[in-house]
Image 1 (spheres, rainbow, N blue to C red):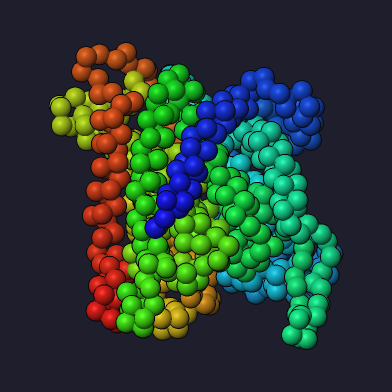
Image 2 (image 1 turned 90 degrees about the horizontal axis):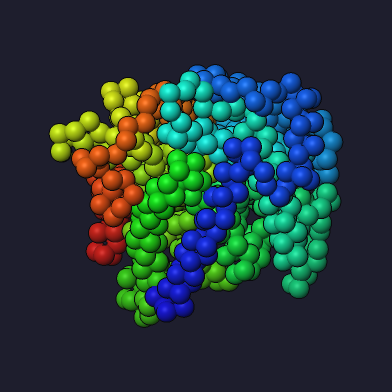
Amino acid sequence: MTTLGWVTILVFLICVIAMTRPLGGFLKRVLEGEKHFLAKILGPVERGIYRLAGIKAQTEQSWSQYAFAVIFFKIACFLGVYSLLRLQGYLPLNPNGMAGISPDLAYNTAISFLTNTNWQSYSGETTMSHLSQMLAFTAQNFVSAAAGIAIAAAVIRGFARRTTATIGNFWADLVRVTLYVLLPACVVLTVFFVAEGVPQTFKGAVSVLTVEGAHQTIALGPVASQEAIKMLGTNGGGFFNTNSAHPFENPNALTNFVQMLCIFALGAGLTNMFGRMVGKERQGWAIFAAMAALFVVGTGVLYWSEAHANPIFASLGIDPTLGNLEGKETRFGAVGSALFAAVTTDASCGAVNAMHESFLPLGGMIPLINMMLGEVIFGGVGSGLYGFLLFAIIAVFMAGLMVGRTPEYLGKKIEAREIKMTMLAVLCLPLVMLGFTALAVVVPSGLSALSATGPHGFTEALYAYTSAAANNGSAFSGLTANSFWNLTLGIGMMIGRFFVIIPVLAIAGSMAAKKMAPPTSGTFPTDNGLFIGLVIGVILIVGGLTFLPALALGPIVEHLEMLRGTLF
């Protein structure tokens, strides 16, 4: 560990804090239909889209109508992406002559991108045409991210409104986020990435002569535009197989830092939007503080782990203080890789600039824990916020039980319906993560895809299903997905997305219909340090009780075996 490494982490956190309030204010104005500087320029485009699509932006929806619109939209996206991937061999913008992909891979990939997971069981540069990369993947990166933010806005309206049956209009929210937030920001980011050396071209692969005299094929394509929305929308799906470890996706330390900021930007901004929409910015900052505290602790442990080499190296005469550089790009080093791994798994992005399987056992455990907690640390765009609110509901419910009062959050009583929906959303994730892992490590088709045995192989399987259910998309690098994995991971991604979305929208509808109770001397405050500590405690206790046995079978026992000199 170095002073420069800790300063890098501190500067990153300061930048995130500085972005939060401006982004929160802009997001609120966009999603509430208020005036903002882009409305004068793009307002006619928005109204034109409404006319062409037959959208009545002023007509609001109940929670069930909102949920139905989300599901209908996602089904349409699945059919479109699946068809395009199967037929890409017959379609244009295919300079490298890529054939259509198999049904199970097309199914897995379509589910992956429409759920904002972006799990990739393929090598993008050798499997997908330029049309698939743009129309299937980049387009889904926009609309899946926009849908997540729209759902978060609907949930916030449920807490902010009183005695109403509606929580907004999904189609209007989707259009506004895409048009005013994601597109303009990605245009700027694309120009920046191109300036830093990221390719943006319709040309196919080129063959070059290396200094050794050999011929090497270099893949090219519209990389920069996909890279921009991949990070800003916390999608994570890379143009190249090695993702942000590839120099064409992430050329230098500056692009690495900017990419990490992009991953956290909207998730952090949504916390401030929450405070503004409920009329108390302190509520948003309380959520931000809890997320930031979890982020700092996790990043610190991860950096500490990767700043030390495997102790077995000491017996070979290698200085262990040099750090663990296996699977990392030297242009990023231990701190750049550790910070990126923490950010991408906190925010359910899934982009990677290092191979997580090469991390030391405890270093690889932190990304796992980040995902197991349910994207609550700034989270995916939208999903992080409403995932955190589920734990906030549990926290105030527990606080109410302890003092013998009906629990309230933001003046709304938390009753049996909200708790039932909360538990349904919270429990579906471990069901997928642990259930499918248990299946995969006992059936031949599951075991055959693993590259390692023992606790490391178990962690490989656990990481895959955790990444799928948490809609993260990063992998432990050693897994070779087959039909069994493509099918089960696809199911895990759907459950992890929609079995959370529908209950939280039901909670939003229930809360919107309630009256706002004025605070009294007995009201539990939810904007101070006590509440922040309580929510963090609930998150860690729920996560610990649920996942500690599985972690003990994987990274924890692997760490103990490593200290004894055993490798897997």
